[in-house]
Image 1 (cartoon, rainbow, N blue to C red):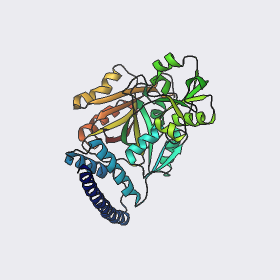
Image 2 (cartoon, rainbow, N blue to C red; image 1 turned 60 degrees about the vertical axis):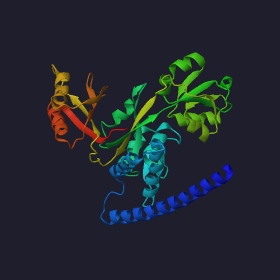
Image 3 (spheres, rainbow, N blue to C red; image 1 turned 90 degrees about the vertical axis):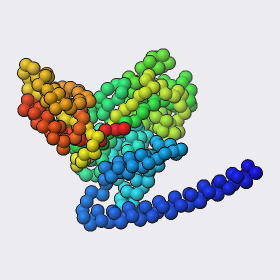
Length: 357
C-alpha cells in the first residue's frame, strides 16, 4: 500500500514538473518580447531594480514549506537564464575561476552570465571602463581583516559607479594534491587570507612558509601543479583543480564575511533601501573632522563606515571613504554632501546602490 502511495505521489510530482516547464517556456516567450521592445526603444536591457522587485514579491508570497533562500536561488537562475535569451551579461572578476570574487558574481548574476576572469582588481576596472563587460565585481571589505585598500584606491582616478554590494560568507580550506599535511612544504594564498586564519596557522603549520598569490584560486592552480605546495582557498577551488582538502573551515571567525561591490559605467536609481558611498579630501584646518561629520548629523543621516587612506600625493594628505544610509537622489542626502563639499579639496560620489540583505 505504501509503495502504491509513493508511486501516486510521484506521478503528481511529474505532472507538476511538466506544468513548471510549460510555464517557464511561456515566461521565456514574454521575456523575449520585452527584450525586443527594449531594443527598439534603445532601453537598457538589464534592469536590476526589476529583478529585485520580482525576488521581493515572490519571497513575500512564499508561505513554505519551500525554503525562502532556495526560492531566491532558483529565481536568480531563472532571471539569469531569461536575460541570456537576449544576450548574457558579461561580468569581469578577479580570476581565475573559483575565486571568492567569482562566487560572489555568480551569487549576484546567476550561472547564465558570462564571467570574464582577469588578473588584478585594476584589470576589472579597466574591462568595465572600456565597455568590454557590463559589470565588474571586486572585493572591498572583509569582516576580519577590514577594507581592501587597493579597491578603494582605484576609485581615486576612476569614474565608475558602485551599483550593488554582495555579502558572501567566506570559508577557507587548506588543500593540496595528496590531502596529507606532511607533504606540504609551502603554502600559497591571497595576502588577506592568513590574517583570517592566523590562529589555526600558528597552531598547525607554524614552520611552513606562507607565500602570496594573486588570488586563492591561483594558489589552488599552483598546488595542482606541485605536490609540495598547499593552498588556502574555497571548496569550489578544490573541486575545480582536483585537490584534496587537508583541513576545512580554518578561519578564526566562523562568521567570516567578505563584502564585494559591483561596478558599472552607469549609476542606478533608488530602491528605497539604499546606501551611498563617497570619497573626499578635506582642507587641513582646526576642527576639520568635526565639520566633516556635522552635515550628516544635522540631516539625521546614519553613517555606516568611515575609512581614511593616504592619498600618495603629498605627506599627511588623506582621502576619506564614507558610506551612509540613503540615495543621492534624496534631498537630504544630496544637501548634506553639498554642504560637506564646501570644506573639501575634492569630493566624488562613488554611487548609490541597494543595501545587501
